[in-house]
Figure (tube, rainbow, N blue to C red):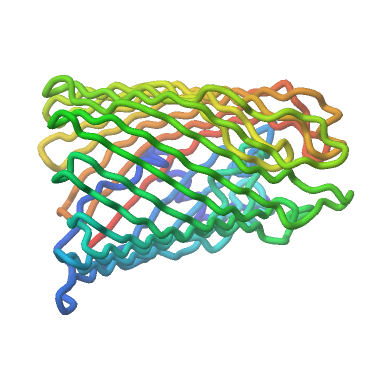
Length: 413
């Protein structure tokens, strides 16, 4: 056990502050530093987090204090013909080992970087290149409970066509996605994957604030490495297609409704007899706006390729609240319930456990105050809880619950 006076003091301060986690800072930003025709925005986020269960264990006994620091920079050159923005933040998550010195081993480098390039973004024909990179351990894979360091990246090229003065808009895109796990635990290589993704979207704005939509995407997921027993995760040629309506039905009330079909189209593999996810998918959401108050809620049904099971189907009910006060205070709250139905296990130990169904509860409450337009402090609380009747032979019970309290200072000049 380890509890230095510094880390104990941080735990005390964080507990008294009754702080937030995922609250995140506001979107406000300072004027930045002039860089030719563009602007350079230096930034830094500093979080102190008390996490009641850093290892996502069923006993929930591994609590710790975490310091997260994220210095970063954003460079932007907006214009009529070329719209360019590049941003990145990289830092360190340090676990103090307040309750158990072993948790300091979870300390790691983390960060993210985004690149956006738009050519003729407001014209009839536009081209966009986007890249999203992250070095993270959260969110966890939804078939596993634990902290797994990995690197994600998706590079995407997108063509956009807006005929008819913008009443019609079509997008066609291709993306290459990579999800690569660190090789610091058993079978880590078998979890890594890459995917070719194609996207199509069409919108017809038949009223000033109402549009019909058609969306299609495909996820050609592949797992190049095997488990120690010689088996591998199931690749998929997943497809989703939906049609829907986006509408502002009154000055304060907006709706979004989409319905369609999804299919995992799992690749055949000797010895695997599981079935595909083949079902209706969609989303329905209502948003109410009154001044600086925004309340939204809805239901969605979808699926995702996942390790160890091929896929999981997801039914989600959610609600969100955002409130601004006096231009300086912001309050947000959210809550969600997810029901996950997994495909059959792809390795013997998992398949022998039978069908798996999980319930996830997540939610949070946060508050922020802008000392200046570009300086904000925030406090909040976040909850994650998983309930399941399934025992993972290799890793124990997958059930867990965790409470996180965070104090955050953010600067984005």
